[in-house]
Image (cartoon, rainbow, N blue to C red):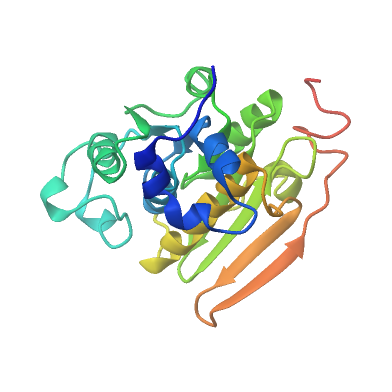
Length: 251
């Protein structure tokens, strides 16, 4: 089936269609794509907002949480009137209001070994919006197995980091972190930090899906909000990685 753009879509996406190297063909690639937002918190809210605004065809939101007052300093899809409501319910409504052209699916369930396969069905790219490394590692492993691109990001205080994972074309999360790092019971977050990293995740996702620019494959992007500095650390693919290395269990 031939997929084109309606006159309304041409008007809605007019400013990005004027970007050099990004035109109608690239916009159609976004329209044909299905993505999973794994967690609709600080990172996931910002990434989802920009990806829906940009015209990704289908967005699946997965989060089992309800909105709490402490979420509202950084989770931009929610307001005080939403306290106690399911995140995916409110986020889905807000995103449909933003762009009714996008198919929004909200799923309120925990990402686990028993649910991950179903959640990744027919997905072209995953946004890592998680706040714990047990779940991050699980998502990384399944994305590598299924060869699904994964945009990883994490935040702590004023700082954040991002890495784009294209299975077997560069390192995966376990190449970067062979073992889960220690995690505090509550992660401190300065309000704008996840917004910056979530927007960068959306930008990387657009580049991967549309085939434009150079995604941060094999590069860990460090954002230091205190100094307003960006650093890049090269990350090598680990041949001994249990997930994507030469001796991995599953070929």
